[in-house]
Length: 548
Image 1 (cartoon, rainbow, N blue to C red):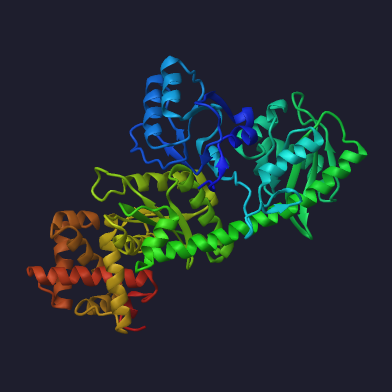
Image 2 (cartoon, helix red, strand yellow; image 1 turned 60 degrees about the horizontal axis):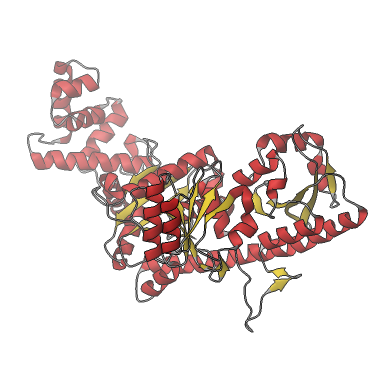
């Protein structure tokens, strides 16, 4: 959410013409901006008063005019659509009638990046006395305001970046920069080809010295840069870059260096605020997941309505990274950003090594109302690719806040199945893995009892261990084929007569009557539990099934 008391006019002041321009306005832009919502064709219109709506996939002027009128009824403050867009008579009339401003977005910009940028535009916070909370004259933690201040000081467009060259904030008037800066702003990341050039030139080594560094143009169509590291003590927080025409004068270089110290204070403040926000969000999400008398108030503070909600659970599963807090926190932050960009009323928290996302779901025609959540999860894993090897479990869509605990339990159970899944699945609804989950829970009960109860099947397991006969596989093939000898024999690459002989030996060793339906069910269940226990290390070899 964008904090209350932010002004719509700030969009143009901070993001500027590189990203946004005003197509049509009902008047001034002093309306309060309370949040950002994303709306696509066919989506249910869920918009709160004061929100700015990103109209994804909206191009037709008639459709734009119709949406503007609907947004006016819900007291939204603005609509953003991608260029090309023009305000014909119908659109201009809809803007006037609705009171909703219409903005055009650069067609090369990513919707998710724009949503993240908009949510990173905090207003000045207030202290207990009600005054502005300032650091060196700029709103505390407001990197966009600080970038504008430094840009005005140098008369140059400025970006503030983290240690990975990701853009945290930028000043206005970026349209006066070059194509490299345009790509950097639109992608919120310095393109790899430029960072590689900077690396080869030794620019990052020079930056580490702590003084402004003049960087010659990286390409013919680019302008020079001046950069300085942003450091708090021995910790490097990031860097600040300005597009210039020539090296800075001694006075401006000194001012740039002093500005970096102020930027460090603001970055520390922003980071501290983010840490506090994470802890508060985690506490509120935990209350919602656990239910109880505090859940309604917690849900209200998170912006979750008492309607259809769904819980998603995710974990990192690869190697040593799964044991590190940093990897789990990165997964939480990535999920929070992804779902906030496409679903503003979602809440994410890292609890006990698992990242939970709670989000509202609209009316759906699928069997449990979670198809849209699965699509978002698939999109997330596709975006992070091999960088984050994670698995995601999805619980049911609830009909009320009181049922969220059930959705969380199902998400946890689906996640547990995926963590040991031989099929390599990375996403599953509980309804997709209910049988596997039940087997794991039965295996838990068996383990708690102190013994793996194989009954008559234990004799067959021991016989296999002593004679290497493979009779357990014979029985499994028969049961898996629902008693079809021809199919079971083919699965084991045996002649049907040979398979029948082996099956008779199985019955002699175990005493199982395979004509009895209850006996077949018991044998099937015992075999499945044996496999689960073997995979979990409860038993390591066939002959040790009864010894722990």
